[in-house]
Length: 405
Image 1 (tube, rainbow, N blue to C red):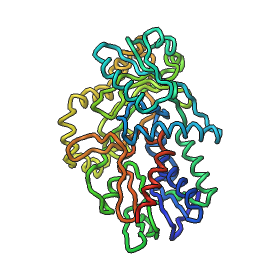
Image 2 (cartoon, one colour):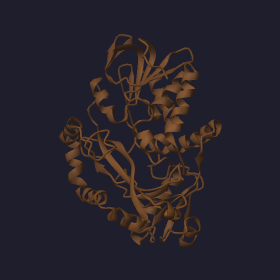
Image 3 (tube, rainbow, N blue to C red):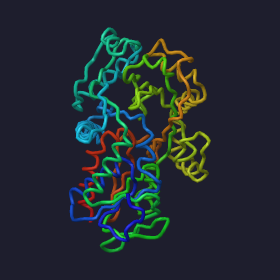
Image 4 (cartoon, helix red, strand yellow):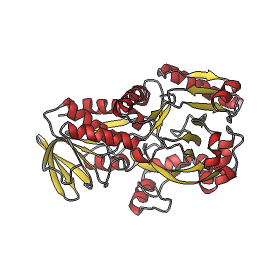
């Protein structure tokens, strides 16, 4: 990893999360004579969404058929497993179950099954209570979907491996270099950063929580805007970790891009419960008390945020209760793990911030959003399953950049 950014590169990629690094690698391999450089504001790789997730490799069940998420998640998961096997990175295909606990949830479970089959999710099966208990002995429900292709991996480790590939191919990753804006001029771009300016022929911006700011500064449409949601977790105490073998999920609300409070055995074997989903006080609010007045003002002044809050205020009240009360979050998970008790869990330091794009109309954008400005491609919305889809998403982004003049 280099310490100083070169004054010129053929392509700069802004953001060293898994999508940014995968895209840089794809571009360097695709154009071996070019110089591809990643610029990252933090001191290390995968410092935000990529390094703060629960590590789930999604199979592609939830996403509307025909959407980018549906297509790229299934293909990306396949390629991710292959990549991890080639590189010796542990990626466990533990599987997961999505559990319906009442008859009212069965139509939604039916829709998930329809989507999963339309998306080509490998091995997806509808199961009953007995089969559910055989897979997850402590789970309870009237029906479930079993996804054996769902797994877990350390996405930060994958990001580091991708960065090594990039550097071996002739590219570079520069940390501690925060990009402020792009200025196109003729056949080139000036990349302004906190230490000066660099020249590039083209650029890709995979800036996660700050994606909208950089896109708007480059002349893109201000709609949608990134609004951060903080997700906090509990964890099972070690002596009760046998309550979960792999992952147990509820049937989610189809109107929201969040999957509900679930239990997942992560790459290190720890079982996490959560996450909550609260409007965050900063785009990097991994600590609850972290508040950026600028970030918060931007979130609350965006008309889409206010419209979203009016539309989903009941959900917000529920999420606030779960965030404030361990018992409330445990009760939500007890619906499908009946033996779970307050004494079985403890607070976890693990927390993430989802960079969720919200439209001016208050809609929670539920697909990847990629747009262009002069000589640049902007990844405007890439929350989960972007990490799962990273290798496939990188190809799509590279195709878009190759078409930019």
